Amino acid sequence: MNQILNYFPDLQPVQIEQFKQLQPLYTDWNEKINVISRKDIENLYERHVLHSLSIAKLIKFVNGTKIIDVGTGGGFPGIPLAIMFPNVGFHLIDSIGKKITVVKEVAKELGLNNVTAVQSRSENIKKKFDFVVSRAVTDIPQFIGFTQHLLSPRDRNSIPNGILYLKGGDFRHELDKIKQYSEIYEITDFFKEEFFKEKRIVYIQITTNY
Image (cartoon, rainbow, N blue to C red; front, top):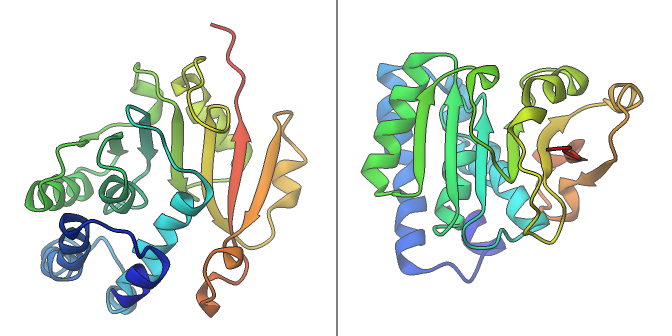
């Protein structure tokens, strides 16, 4: 938790309290429904919360922005970002119902009125969003194919609408296969912890024609 306060010193008291609640909430739910690996639950703030919040270092979403978290698992990066941006709408989806159960309960316990969560595949979602966020659920070309229909043509943030993808390792060969404009951001530019070495945010700009 101290890591969160260190990197985000301007949090409001309600946000600090919400972040503090994440550890006991996820520890409790993880015993019922395993959404986080046993070793990672002890490093929840670094490996899940802070990792998710790297996106908040890259962009400050304007109020009213709509974001979909595809393959959210237990709620990452969506839940930490929803705490950070209370005036931004987050729609969290996963194909596994048990995981969405956890997401719904965590959001309810935290009082996150800006979060909705449904069991669904991205292909079945008809609404439009400003950004798609996710933590490496598949290779980049395939992910674009699954999600580009979700993006609205109307930009309102500091960067055009697109995908913000948290991914580690060497994936440049994946980017060589796509035609969209992309940019890679090193998370170690934001956070100094060893865990973030070779962890990156990939921004992919999606131009829509409708």
